[in-house]
Image (cartoon, rainbow, N blue to C red; front, side, top):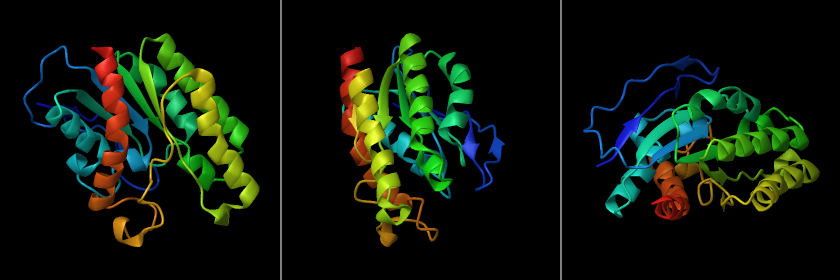
Amino acid sequence: MVVVYLTTSACANSGEREAARPAPSPRPASESPLVVFLGDSLTAGYGLAQDEAFPALVGEMLGRSGHPVRVVNAGVSGDTTADGLARLDWLLKQAPHVLVVGLGANDALRGLPAPGVEANLREIVVRAKRAGARVLLLGMQLPPSYGEPFARGFGELYPRLARELRVPLVPFLLEGVGGHAELNLDDGIHPNAEGQRIVARTVAPYLERLVAENR
C-alpha cells in the first residue's frame, strides 16, 4: 500500500503555496523508503487532482511491482532551481531515502543563464547526497524556439551533472508528452491526466532501480 503525503502544492501560476492535507490512506510499513519529489508545477500536477500527478502515479506503480514507497510531492508552482535550493534543508529533515529533483523549467522560461541553473542543481544534489539520500535527476530539454545556443546549453547541463555527480538521470521528463497538444492542458505547458500517466511511466523504472538498491 502506498500513502502520499503532500507537504506543499501548486495553487496558481503565481506560485501561491498552501499546506496540503495528507491523503486519507493507510500508512504503509515504516520501513518503506521515503521518496521526496522536489519540483515545480510539472511535479505538483498543476490543474489536476493530487492523485493524478506523476509522483503519486509512480508510487502506485512501484507498489504494484513489489517496491512500496512513501511519497512526498514537494512540487511548487513557479519554483526555480534557486527556490528549490532555498527549501531543500527543510525537506532533508524528513530523511528521504531518495530525492527526485525535477527543476529548471521555470529558470528556462525566465531566460536565466544555464551556469546559474547548473550551480543550483549541483548544490541540491551535493547536499542531498551528504544527508544520505540517493538522488534521481529529471532532465529537461527546450524547443528550438528558445534559440539554439540557449537550448543546447540548457539541455547539456543535466547529463553533465549526472555524470560528474554520479547520479541517475531521466534524460527528458516530458518525453513523448512535450509538444503533443492532446497530452497537455490548454496552456500547452502542463501535462493533462493522460500526459502525467506517460510521465509516470517514464520515471518509474529509474526510481524502481534506486529503491531496489536501497533495500
